[in-house]
Image (tube, rainbow over all chains, first blue to last red; front, side, top):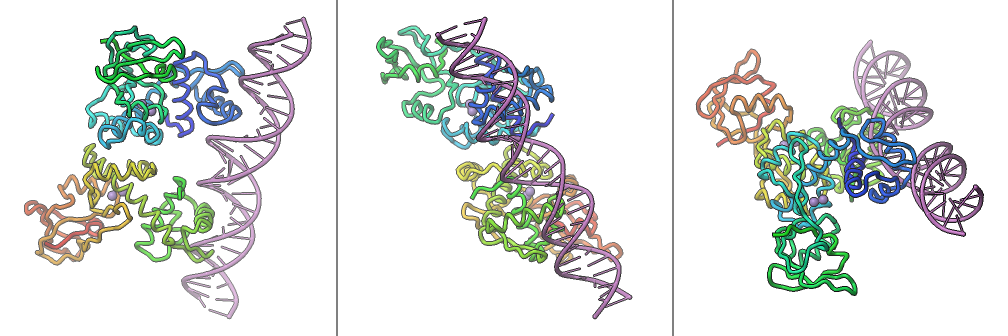
Length: 219
Length: 219
DNA sequence: ATAAAATTTTAGGCAAATCTAAAAATCAAA
DNA sequence: TTTGATTTTTAGATTTGCCTAAAATTTTAT
Ligand SMILES: [Mn+2]
Ligand SMILES: [Mn+2]
Ligand SMILES: [Mn+2]
Ligand SMILES: [Mn+2]
């Protein structure tokens, strides 16, 4: 019912890794948590014994229902604090993730529900990621990766899943934020970069690496 | 420069105990921290080696300048979060202390300074305790204990230093909060209880035990 | 199918913070 | 001032989470 900070970090990271690949490997988790594979094996054994994940030695693991629910609780707290930091304390979107990494571990149902109400029950965090509600329900948005957007089709930037400080800082400096209109003018075959129009005004070039991190909704 | 949650709790509690008695004893600290004297001895040895407190084996200890500064930083965070919880999230004053006990350990200068600004640089927390400013300065208020207030002298409730949930809940239910007008009608010799008038209206009886926890400013 | 490479687990340790039990020091009283 | 009670410290364990190095297992390549 109540987990340590370390256990919570494992649960959250496993949840995110699962979203991409189905089963999560020891190495990928070790890398994501900046720890060593041996440590991961020990912790996953513990989490298994607490019935938070399915785990067969050498085979990888995934969250149980219980583990999933716990992870969503942590993600709810993380994203609500991110929203608070950005909207109320005026932090920029590249700064909030790191701070929320600590605040998310203050775990009192009443605190987080009051915070939710104070913020007006926001549905998206500053990066466009959905905020699970009281019951752990996640709103689903039908976004596509910017790299999949056809040319000359207007869309809105709706989500940036990568939390890298420098990526987010870069986007902010280019006035690209959640809700900003965007359109692909040209795909450059040589480096797969994109020439895009931002805010129906400025035209800039985005490397493939950056474009892959941006998700949009066609309007 | 950066201390563990445990070290922070020690520093804060030593600060408060020092305020009352000069030198702090191993047993009193153990009691306040709900731990055992043996654990206190080990931790204080560590804090001494970090030059956060003066400590002679068997003789008791007190904070160094450095330790004092650190303690004030923790108290600043604690009280600002208490203010936030009470003013913004509408928690009652008996609920905020416990929540702030966890939030106070999220330690980022910029976060706390932004929170301070967001709250409008409050000077007192919900219990009337002064909030140290950015530089650790504490405003001093000239309060007296309710038990010292002369009869028929109007005063304002300005501080309740005891953080007991049930004491604070009791006072709230009697409409006694920071800023509430109060006046002593009669001292009862038998049990040293006080008949007081609250808000220039209701007259109630306060036991000596309760009266000792209330501090007032004569108006 | 086998050998080499990669991944994962086990074994053995370490540091922080706690505990209990026993020893040492201090304090209080007769 | 000696003794008995109290306080404090030391000794030795325990728990959590992490580490390195070595062994076990699985995957990949010849
Ligand atoms: Mn984040
Ligand atoms: Mn986010
Ligand atoms: Mn408090
Ligand atoms: Mn307070």
